Image (cartoon, rainbow, N blue to C red; front, side, top):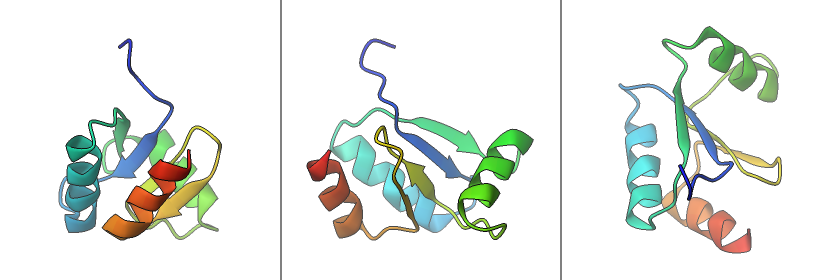
Length: 83
């Protein structure tokens, strides 16, 4: 994908906060890779490692290596604007 970014969202299908964060990214036309930790064991382990063995979702990892956990819409938009 030509306009693929390095943004990765660790999420699940059933997570309301994940759906909300995806809507923000989609509305802003931000491309991202979604990894469903219910089905991707490696993704689950990465999310777990980032959060001291207690994974919460969504965990959104940005191109600069920073990440947000369960961000509000405002936090997510602010972070995207800072990149």
